[in-house]
Image (cartoon, rainbow, N blue to C red; front, top):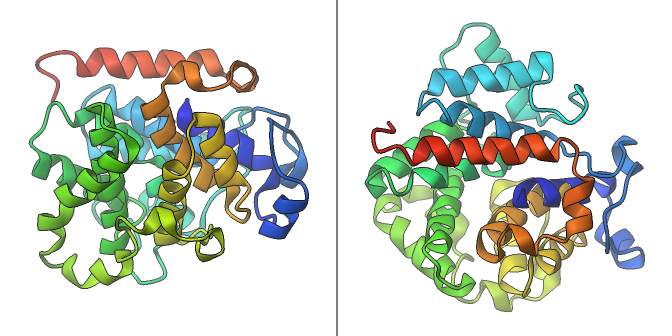
Length: 305
């Protein structure tokens, strides 16, 4: 729900400039705007997060995850109103590959230009395997799930860092500690090829990130920018609402940066911290909660794969 509410708050103002958001900051849930959708409508960010969670209820199976993504694309699975109205280029290309019979291990783009935020925005359900798997195996699976649509090592690293930080939050650590410890935990893995040569792209993810002025934070759809912006918003605010509104009011890729921020803020501050009117406005909210409960139930089974 943390991902979804951030997403829905950002949908009406996606692609607006930072100057526009400064003149007319988002302070509450809105509707219509960019996609002319009613308040509480979420986009592909949440849809693909729910598709992943849905697949994980039956264990970890890349083919099954890929099938859910295809059903979203072709039959509007896990959409608010049976309509797909927003899809990223790399995701669209990868799903087209899957629909042509390419296996999920080969479907994602691996070129430099395949580093949008489309795998990062949907990866959070993978954190719930943290109690079941050794950390190297968790990271490997996260990379595999990213690679269904985004196979470049930089996108895989962004997902790995995000899940590592989320894992630390689930262990009850404060935001700054969770971010520092989460990034430290992945360091030994990302010193190895093929990740080693990508490390310079993440050099701003250090203890100084939170101190950067807002004009140094980009909220574009590039995966490194989105991760930086989400962590910056999370570290510089003190509540779920503040964090996601900060993310949206950066402008540009508002729904995705807010979804990524909202995932972390939801884990840390908890479901009850999400303002009730926002939760109540969310399309299919009861089904989303039921999905979360189903995933929790499946993962509590001792023999869960």
